[in-house]
Length: 72
Ligand SMILES: [Zn+2]
Image (cartoon, rainbow, N blue to C red; front, side, top):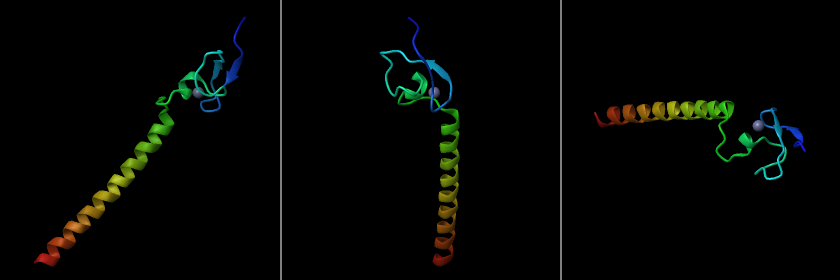
């Protein structure tokens, strides 16, 4: 007997809903995995990290500049 075909709510790909499949019934095995590779999600996180690190660098430069000027 074939397994029922479901559409993943995360990546919208079809997958076989096997009785022993871990995780959510409406997610494919890939998206059910705790550390699933999700290109879009990862890219968004990287962009956020890049942005925050750029802001942190700018803030650090400003702080160093302030320090240099106040000490002279
Ligand atoms: Zn999926």
